[in-house]
Image (cartoon, rainbow, N blue to C red; front, side, top):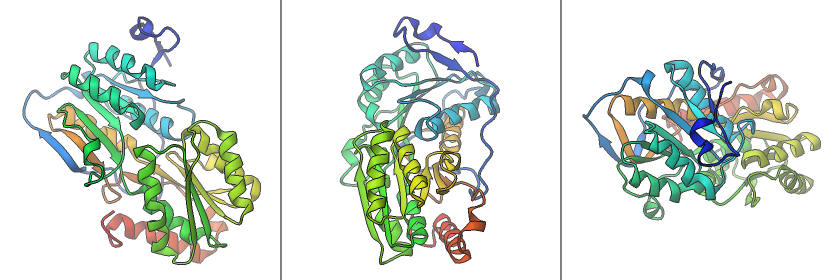
Length: 358
């Protein structure tokens, strides 16, 4: 892939941008539902009319907190810009390993170049995204987020016409429902990296999901305090496994890989998250529950092109297919049939809305 360093050389010499034209997206997982349809926006402003854009001439960049090889949070955003590049022929770009303290300068660089769509991938960058969105009204800013707006969270969303807080919701319910079926010991644990909106929304739904399929299980959730320390995550996960927990999952960028390693080493079940993580620990990862950001950001991209942009909180529920599930990768032949049937059944019911408004 061609390195595109010119834009950022004046800002931070140690980082680069990468243009990714013509890269094919990952195959769609077998268990997934059709692509995202209309988003459910709990606090959004429609921007109708105005000039429509030629999608092939739009400029998009993804600004990432970590590396695109983390098999999770950052890779799924990378897959999003790959998807746009493949389908619409645009010169989509990304930047890796951006610290919170540096994000404003990265955003400013692309806003000065009048990029149509600037994806700021992580709620830890909220302040920078809000400040720069106000300063550069000609660009559309997407802050990768993920929670429903209610009385307790309404003040976290700013009313800025060119800023959308974009993300899937209710992933925790789906993960928990699967965990409740998988467990043999009736003890499951989910570990979040940090207490930030994109992760707390998942953590808050785990027990609710488990209770849909298992009324007796002990459900533990906790935070690692890191998004990147896989060794610490492995140590924490191993401690839970040694205490009888036999299903493990996590949301913590590269740190979550440590949880999968621990599960494989100890011979218990794991669920991958964000990306299809079967290849990380094939003897442990039964399924992966993935944020469907490639389809979500394609939907947002087209809303800009068609002058149908929505600002505010733009939420994709399970019924909107904001979250998808990976292929079984042969685990449907290894698990007891009753578990496989029960998992397939609860997934379908959640997507159809038969178990609630998820």
